[in-house]
Amino acid sequence: GIGLAHVCNARGYKLVCCMPEIMAKEKQNTLKQLGVQVVLTKPMPLKDPKSGKPNMGHYHNLAPLLAEEGRKRGENIFCVNQWQNTANRAAHYLTTAPEILQQTGGKVDAFCAATGTGGTIGGVSRYLKQHSPKTKVFLLDCHGSALYNWASTGDKGSEKVLAGERWCNKPKMDPGSSPVTEGIGNSIVTENMEGLLDYIDGARRINDADAIRMVFRLLHEEGIFVGGSAGLNVCGAVQLAKELGPGHTIVTVLCDSGFRYGSKFFNKQWMEEKGLLQHLPPEHRVGIA
Image (tube, rainbow, N blue to C red):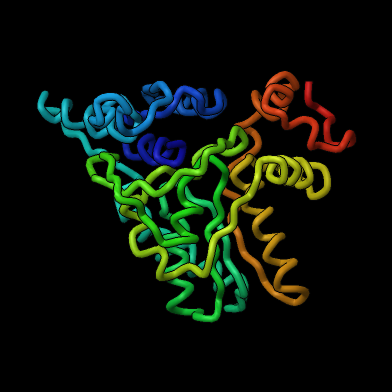
């Protein structure tokens, strides 16, 4: 959303973003500061458990619904639909993946990344397997998501739910949840994820304790200020590095900034309520109040 906001400002477009109200306040405020109309939605499943009908108030479905209503009023509206729009995947195939090979001199032993829309890993995995076939690719996932089970077993599940104008397969969900990460994990197989299993070699599930420890380790030991999703990605990269041993090149993506998690990660009450503070060593608790 923030990237789109900059593009829209540069080109003179108005942007409306639908997002869950539980997303970090910093992200909501940044969008508003960039002139975006932010529409907050209540947390809800894609399908109403009682009626079995699609929840049109879910942010996946609300955005195209608002776009359609606008078109009926004669407005010139385009719904980006980043989950189902494969331009997302294509952008990473055409830019991110070639950059990875260029910066590593063509030597990448493994690439790993978590995913929400499927764009990054969908595009990068395709390119790497075509231009560097020996590179291993792993999908990373958090608790409370269905992607690890899908990537590990190949089972998409028999149920389909409406998400962003597309009926998507709904694999078996992990029963947990992840307060640490935002924007990754999913309950569905998006259009950007279709065919992904042909280009990955496996999946890893990273728990919140490891992810939050990595966030603060990177901050205090490496001087890199990242968010929970990037912390999870680095955890996966470290796991792979230990498995492969010295002398291998592992690539991941630092996909979010810690500046957007201040109200959570540096809020002592929030960290204690989520059971996360106990996982940090005392020297890494500086600034948490």
